[in-house]
Structure formats: structure tokens, C-alpha cells
Length: 254
Image (tube, rainbow, N blue to C red; front, side, top):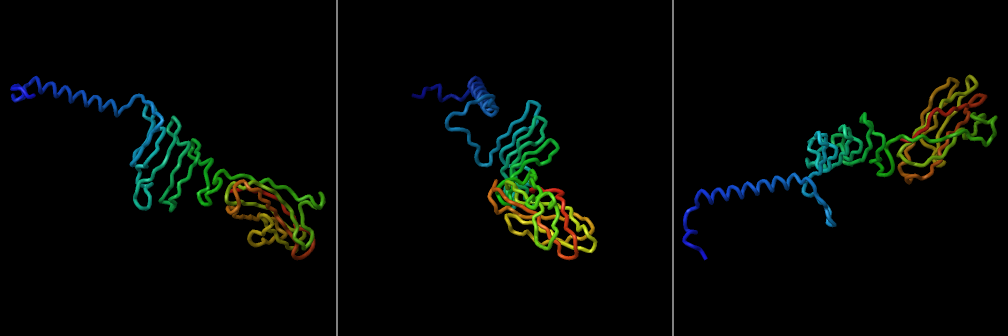
């Protein structure tokens, strides 16, 4: 029940108590924002509505960023901020990132492992959404020994003959093979082609008396990740006499 004293105006003592109470509340709010130590129970931790999670070293080096990229360069085409992840070494250099680069025309995020020089050493393929974009993986190949050692590595007739063949596990969307080839008789001509799973890839390439490098490429994105794929280099003489000779220079996935 109100008393007569309650009707009196507040004095200096009452004002001091209120100020003291407000100061205490401010201290508690500041302490809550710093949150020196905490445990998260069964419900877990949720960061919503554009919030961010960050972690820095005692010297201020940012090591983890999860949330919106504040640099407008990375904004989506509609102007919204991109949500991404950056994990860094103690020196501040990236080692694992996941983001898209809209200025290049791509809105598809990709995860990448990065070395200290900033080179991407392992990354996913965002075009096919399967397998790796990096690293480029070699394709083991060897001469086809069906005709014996005397047969390697030449095609002596006009019938298409396998000169080099190999099998690899599909990891990346493309493969490339480079071959050095020539006819061993002046005036003779021949052709080389490449097959993947028995299907010729592109047009056959001409081979003359002068040695030269020929490059063959194929897209294998449609094949399943880690599927075993057969690849072969084939050759034949198209005019003149003698044999077509071919030496494998390099073969890799990219």
C-alpha cells in the first residue's frame, strides 16, 4: 500500500541508486557480448538472419570466417551478399575456402584447398558437379603389344592400328594426350586419331615425314566419377610406303 513517503519527489540518494543499477546492467551486457567461455548443449548453436561466425588469433589474425562476404565484389547478381567460408592458417593465408566469383559469370560455389602461395591444389569441378577440377591427374598408357616388340610403336599398313592404349579412373571432366609422330619414309602420309571407350574423338590428324607434336582432347564429364575409361591412340598409313611411328609425349586429366 503506498505511503506518504512514496508521494515525495526522488532525492539525491534515490538517483544515485538508479545510476548504480544502470551501470551494473551495462557491465553485464558488455560481459555477455564478450562471452569468455561457454558450453553449447543438445540444442546446438544457430547463427541466423545474416549473422557471421569468426575466430581470430590473440594478435588479431583472422583464421575463420563463416557468413556473409562484406566485399561487394562478391555479391550475387541480384545484389545480395554471398554467404561463404574461409579457413586460414595462423599467418592469415587461406588453406580451405568455399565461395563463388560472380564477376566471372559464375554463381556456383566451389570448395578449394590452397597452398601458401595461393595456388589451388585440390578443387571440385563446378561444371559437371562431379569429381575434381584440380589437380590434373596423369593417365597411364603403354604401347599395344598385340603384334610383339617388332610392332611397337608403328603402323605399317593402311588399316587403323592401336599404337598406344591405357585405362584410367575418371576424376576430372577432360583428358588430353600429346603424341610426337612422323612417317619414316619421305613422301608418305598417315593419320592418327584418339578413341575413348572405343569411340573416335574429333577428326583424325595428318602425319607427314617431318616429326611434329599432335594434341588430342576429349570431354568425359558424362562418365561416372571413378569409372574406368579406356583410351587409345591409333594410326595408319594413307599414302606412300613405310610406316607411321608415334611416341607418347604426355597424357593427363584436366
